Each structure stands twice: as C-alpha cells, then as structure tokens.
Figure 1 (tube, helix red, strand yellow):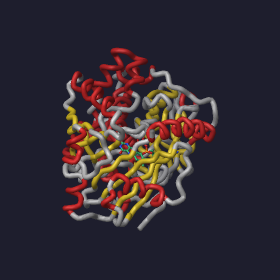
Figure 2 (cartoon, helix red, strand yellow; figure 1 turned 180 degrees about the horizontal axis):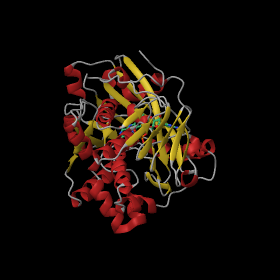
Figure 3 (cartoon, rainbow, N blue to C red; figure 1 turned 135 degrees about the vertical axis):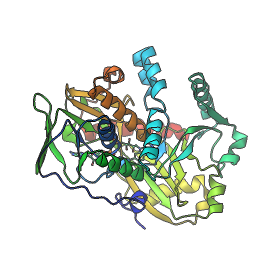
Figure 4 (cartoon, protein in one colour; figure 1 turned 45 degrees about the horizontal axis):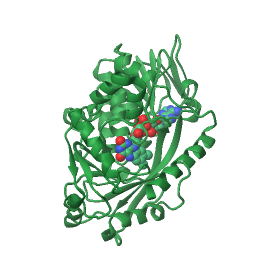
Length: 422
Ligand SMILES: Cc1cc2nc3c(=O)[nH]c(=O)nc-3n(C[C@H](O)[C@H](O)[C@H](O)COP(=O)(O)OP(=O)(O)OC[C@H]3O[C@@H](n4cnc5c(N)ncnc54)[C@H](O)[C@@H]3O)c2cc1C
C-alpha cells in the first residue's frame, strides 16, 4: 500500500516504461515545448502531425504532473464557459459550442490511429448532491439539447438503476464523455510524437526562456533554439511573469484507489461503468478502473496544503457514498495540483509574439488540454480565430504573491464548501 503524494495507481499500472534522455548540449527545432503533460505532448504531437520539427523538454518524467495523476474523467467542454459567453457574446458562445467535444474527438482519433491501450470508456454522469441541484442540471441539459447535445436526465427515483448508492438526487448522463487511464493515454501520445520525430527530453528543467529575435529555452545542461516557444501547462512560479503574473493558483486534489473488487461488487456499485462527478463546487468524483478498483477523488484543498494522512482524509467520504465498501482495503492514495484561474477560463495566449502559453484548466484538463493544443497549434500555423478569442478574455489577477492568493482562494472555497453542505 502506498499513501504518499507520488506513488499513483496509474504509475503502478503504466504500460510503457520508456525513459527519454536528458537534454545535454544544443538542439534546434521549429518549436520548443516546455512541459510533458497533456498540454505539451498533445501540442508536440499536433505540430509533428502537421510537419513541424519539435523538441519537448520535461523537468521530471512524462506524466509527472497532473496529466499522469488525475481522475481520468473526460468531461465535455472547458471550465468557465459562462464567463466566455459573458465576455465574448455570440462569438464566444459559438466557439464554446464548437469545441465542446473537440478534445474527445482528438483523443479517440489518436487512440485508434496510434493504437494506444488506455482503457477508454464512454459514459459520464453529473449527479445531484442535493435535491435543489436538479434544477441546475435540468437547465444545463435543456441548454445542451438546444446546442444539439444528447444528454439524458436520470430522475431521482431511477438513480438506483445507475449507481449503488442513495447519496444522490438525480443526475444527467453524457454518453459522449467518459473515462480513461490518463497516464497510459499520455504515454501513448508521447510515443506517437517520438515516432513522428519529436525529440523528447526528461529530467531537464527549463531554467530560462526567451522569445524575441532568437527564441530559446535553456536547461542546466542544454539549450533549445526554436522559432516559437510553448509554455505547456503549469510550471514553476518563476515562469508566471507578465500576463501570467497573479493569474494561477495551484491547489491540491486527492485520489484513493481501492483494492481490486469482484465483478459482482463493481456491477452493483456502477453497473454502466460511468465516470461520476457530483454537482458540488468542491466536488467528489469517481470511476472504476479496468482492473475493478474504485478510484475516488475530490476534496480540493484550495490553501495548497496537503493533508498529512491522505487515506484518513479521503476514506470517510468514500464510505459515506458507498457504505458497502467500509471493509475494503485502500491500495493507493495520491494527490496532485489543479491550476485554478479566478475567471475559470483556461489561460491561452502569448507572452510575446512567439512565446505561447496554455494553462489553468481548473480541473477539467483531459479534454481541455487537447482543445488548447489544437488552438495553439493552429495559431502557430497562422490560423488565429479561436486563439484570438481566448486571448481577448479579461482575467482576474490577484495582485498578491501565490501564498497569499491561495489563502484568499481557500477562504472563497470555504464559503462554497459550507454552502455545499447546507
Ligand atoms: C488529482 C487530480 C485530479 C484531476 N482530475 C481530472 C479529471 O478527472 N478530469 C479532467 O479533465 N481533469 C482532471 N484534472 C486536471 C488535469 O489533470 C489537468 O488540467 C491537466 O492534466 C493539465 O495538463 P498540463 O499538461 O497542462 O499540466 P501537467 O500535466 O501538470 O504538465 C505540466 C508539466 O510541465 C512540467 N514542468 C513544470 N515546470 C517545468 C520546467 N521548468 N521545465 C520543464 N518542464 C516543466 C511538469 O513536470 C509537468 O510534467 C485533475 C487534476 C488533478 C491534480
């Protein structure tokens, strides 16, 4: 059993143990991508598919960040859609509609094209944590129907047909969304990128980068010269400069994985094998792994301080939802950082004409990173329409350091957590 913040169930069930070299000496490429999570790997792969030469530099190992340790829920759309519509009007609404399942499509196309074994399953459900939340879910379903999406309402009295718990008060199901082993998806995409010629370097933290006439990214032992730089995903505090200053606040989210359960048990808990998230702001999320473990996550810690004992912190909530699991063993417990932006709209833009950034998916990154990668790759290729819309979004910046910002965020989220409980 492992209960530290690093050993994940995903690591223990990875199906690719490739080690990429560390960067030593000078290399040149069209594009230098910094970060080996979904943002970076999906961007590198997209650009390689379009014929660009790409170098990707990762400070630790591919998937060491949020992309290799998340809930694996492939959720429609991006966070902050309401803010996009408010700020950008019809153009924003149209874009949100058009990109809602773009990440899903990219992921599924790649799984097929590159034969990536990552246990992709269709079916995602948002469950009403309180009776009053059903109004909100019904309104969402009605609006989605107007946009041509096919979501199904589960009436409160039918909840037992879809979940072995009385904890929820109705739900909706999105059959186009679903769940996946995120690390194996990412490793498969990295493998595909490498096959297309992307040079991947691990254990190579970038310590300096610049745009201008001669863009570069530098590590302790090497340097990449490129025409454009992409800051892909949450990176060091030192990189949060210029327009990124005061924008991003990393917060903790945690997952426990039970021992492998019997077929009969998982069928009784989650007969349609759905990924589930509840409707609270500070939400729980869970799904069943391919080897029949319940992966149960949530309880975002907005102050950015990790609980001392993750199993003790997470298990009571699992048992509250599924009392029948009170005697099961917890085999893994881990956490990761979710990058929160106050407006909730992912930050996609440029620091300089040839330095792009993409980060701040607010816990909806599996789909959204692939959307962002497509948008940034389009911009690099000269198609600016969707990129320019994101670039126009006015973000709220907290003019304080990250620690103070996290305390302010924690206070705000405490309010929501109390409201969720009422
Ligand atoms: C516990 C948890 C559960 C989540 N659950 C879900 C979910 O179910 N569904 C969903 O859609 N989203 C979920 N998310 C969010 C999702 O995982 C992220 O939004 C997404 O993975 C972000 O991908 P990324 O590539 O932008 O960042 P990351 O995956 O964090 O990648 C950034 C990479 O950059 C590297 N790096 C940082 N600094 C440097 C540097 N100086 N030089 C080189 N490399 C550097 C890091 O090592 C890291 O590998 C969850 C997140 C967490 C933490």
